[in-house]
Length: 187
Image (cartoon, rainbow, N blue to C red; front, side, top):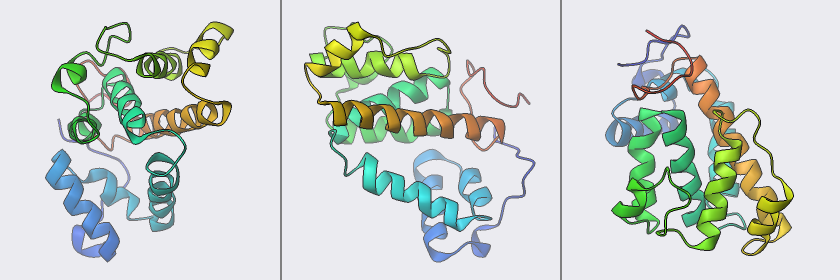
């Protein structure tokens, strides 16, 4: 079901050129641009969000492949249909196979290398569906086999931003949700 936010949606022509390009990408890849239309009210916040992707997600210490893996894991756990459409394509572009994408919910699958398994386990701990998740000594040691402390912090911050944005998107009804999604407005 198409989102129906309370905050008004700016028409494409009222958006800046950068926001119009984002509108076009969202419509093409994800089938909806409600998020972009609402964010048009605060282009500086949209710029900040874009900077997060440029400076951390695509340019940080952790490989984009691992970040695409955790982003897809979180969006499928949370039930964001809007996110899942694009995240699956981005995961494929980063080198994940269709078989791995299908196994995204099983961090114990033999399809995953040790670094991927550890990152997926951390994603399960950070997910909104796990309010008691914690980075304990055992998971930390698993992560340390593949990541240094700076990378472990980057993974956590990246997932924190992604899960926070998911909550925002759901509460403000800015994205289409999967049938199983338990967050945000129910229409």
